[in-house]
Image (cartoon, rainbow, N blue to C red; front, side, top):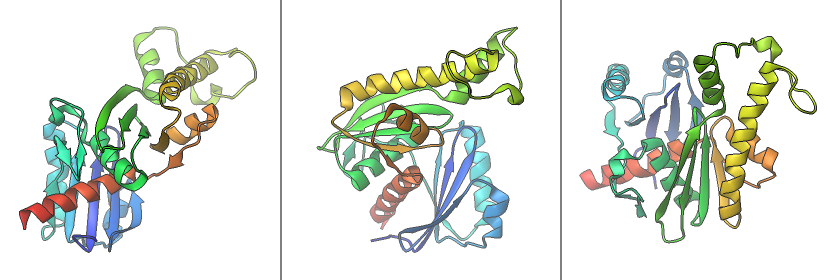
Length: 244
């Protein structure tokens, strides 16, 4: 049962902000552009706010939300030792990214235990939760674009433009293909090693690159684009219940 009727989840990532609207516990829509958000004329009863950015950057977005929705109850989400019956693996849970924590909580409650959660965006994040609702830990590696950008930023002669990024057969025969396909192979190799250890688990994916990578590996996985928002709803609802 939903604690608030109209809810807006604000998920502040490293490169973009996702706004997800719920009504009566159901996802209505999700956008990344705050201009589109305002045009929706959606007036939430509450805002659940989660950010992986610095304190100063997070406060700026938070103040903006408060100016847009002065009458909405604000709940700022943080990683904790336990939430919604799920136990965090970290000895210092506040150091676990809130996006990872929310996917772990949502992964367990929506898909069950013995689940591997893949979130592939700016970074590729892997987390595992068991049948006892215990988060076992996970990995963080650079995402595809981050790997490519690192090569461009730290080398003098690796240069190409978007028009050169063409798919071809066989070994890459251009710098653009060498970088693009090389980074892709690195990500696939990482996920393949994880799969060897957890092939008997359910796999749930979210994030822009996750489904494509797992499809290339032939790994059967559930795709859930709203996983962070669903976790935010679970955790935020619990926080509001405890306040009453």
